[in-house]
Length: 236
Image 1 (cartoon, rainbow, N blue to C red):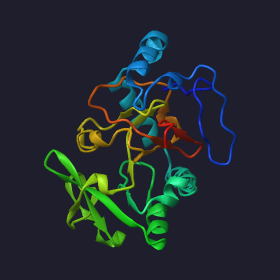
Image 2 (cartoon, rainbow, N blue to C red; image 1 turned 90 degrees about the vertical axis):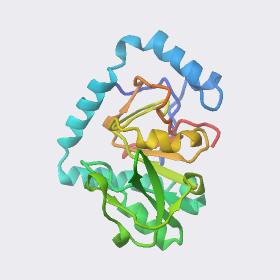
Image 3 (tube, rainbow, N blue to C red; image 1 turned 180 degrees about the vertical axis):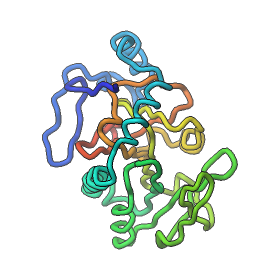
Image 4 (cartoon, rainbow, N blue to C red; image 1 turned 120 degrees about the vertical axis):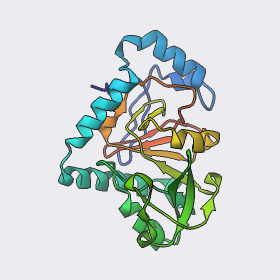
């Protein structure tokens, strides 16, 4: 089971006081913080990090056990936390995703964003990558590859979005992400790492203290769960 962090890192939580930090590895790292993060994980947490494949299987199994009521309740609280963030209020263009397999829902954010006059982008699978396309209504989403609802309009550059909300199977406190193993988001968003644009949506049990990362894994700037908001990138 994934291990949760208690007080090793500073966490910004909406409507709550930050947890104090006394030995955060972020304090001595650069924007991406990768060399120090890897050293920290290797030297201090090696025996506690679950292998990537095992963590993916365990987390997906736990997510499948969620009832529809739990998915709705957790997703509602998660989205409310996101909507309260100053980053959301500043953003004019937001990229979301169409949830599958009990992923956190995004429809509340979509409706609120459209009502506020913000532009919405959704991903569509194109070959080995994903393209983000603008939608004016959720009714424009149609089943695409893998049965996921996708847009059909003209593609936009990922960098055109002010915030890109990313799904995943597991995340850690350093922003590392485990997806489904296809690498679509990794390939499409790697150049935006550290930009302050990348936001993960996940349930709190999907958030681990540390996971096994690989060089191609895209790193998040913010992680939003139903219980907290983790600011990985302290420069935003």
